[in-house]
Length: 147
Image (cartoon, rainbow, N blue to C red; front, side, top):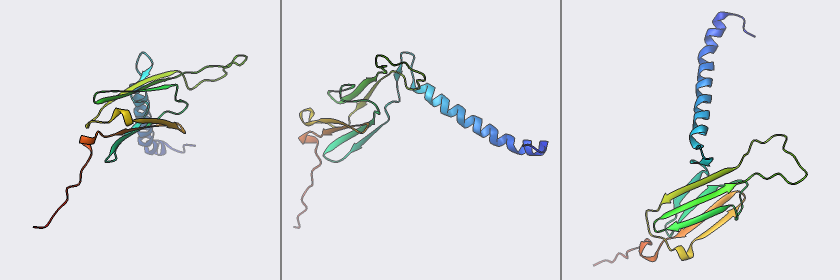
């Protein structure tokens, strides 16, 4: 409980900072969602170059292999999918915080990959896409010889 206006004056900057941070959080959430229900910044992904392959990991909780599509067109890989919310017959929703969401994210690859050897696996809510580099794009070690 406030004891004086001086105490309120000391709390005001903290409350303003809290409000500013909450506004940033909501702005970020709203920026990710578009008018048609597609999410631009979802799923969150990591792209790594492992030397012999590019590995893309995407967080897709609640989605399975039938909910996600991966396409590779020349040097662009696209992850797309949809999370649907279906209520089983005989049940009704009392509260729903996770709605239907569609997503599509594309990545321009900086190297050629071997599409025939590419794999995609969903495990524990994470999609792991492994794109082996084409033979001509593989790193090579040059042998050093003394003269």
